[in-house]
Length: 120
Image (cartoon, rainbow, N blue to C red):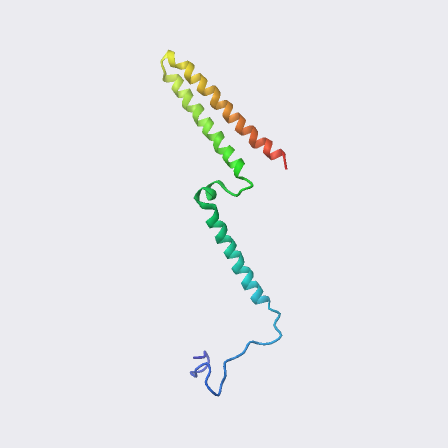
């Protein structure tokens, strides 16, 4: 039914309406561009997976992983400080070694992050 009358939209004596001629096709082009962008977004979402969405795009992935390494090294340093405080005297050398190595690991990861930012 049409909006302004109670007649059916087309009958035998009233053919269906045709599109106007002379259109430049911008509406159709915009529709297909929008559909293509939606498709590309969905494909990227499916290709990344849960870990890719967590870490990020491919150009920033090494930096994000190095940031996780820095945080992990600093957490391990904190654990080794607590461990060396509560450990007996025989185990303090072990915890000092863990502290040194975790700080070195964090420093190397941090150097990677700052070194990567300077090379473009």
